[in-house]
Length: 254
Ligand SMILES: O=C(O)CCC(=O)C(=O)O
Image (cartoon, rainbow, N blue to C red; front, side):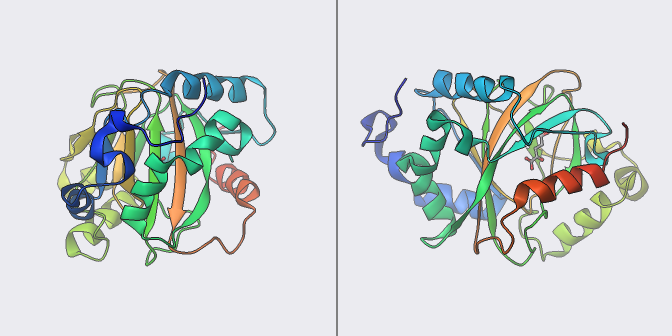
């Protein structure tokens, strides 16, 4: 199925960007769900994802990181660059316009990845190759229907304001294994959250600094593509080698 790159009225006035209210929402809470933004292309995207992963691609990394409780995750850097249907996402005006609205006109594209996760993910914020004082955006395309009990992305709204006492305290909690129990006396699953439910074809926008997690999904494959943007280009573009080294360092088993 060909990509719809031209103007597309099916998505209405918001097809080419966010409303002021959506921008306020993102700026305040750190994330935004764009229901059905890629619904028309969903089957082609899903098929392309499976085609890339089933071709045993070079650079496929299996990890069992602490943040995933030692459970299995497959990650593939440069995901969208490996298939024309996926690569079209990078230049699709529905994506470029929301990136522009969140990050401004000079946002640097930092690359993409694809993941199959059989794991849960403990609370963390994204800092890999992303200096904390710089703004970063992750565009997520989860390819499964997900809710709070089946691995929908959970965030703690407001933690994107990373310098606040609220966010600083929660990051310190999350950086320690057992931190939720130690600080609040609860299981990490019981921290207050917003679960961003997902339907195939939805697009989620997330600030890297959000404390985010997923629970309830062990052993059930979840596929996700992410496109990443920052205020500045990466100094070192060998993301794949660094990712492999990172995964090796944090490997719990094997
Ligand atoms: O889907 C998940 O389990 C977590 C994804 C995540 O943490 C990320 O992509 O930054």
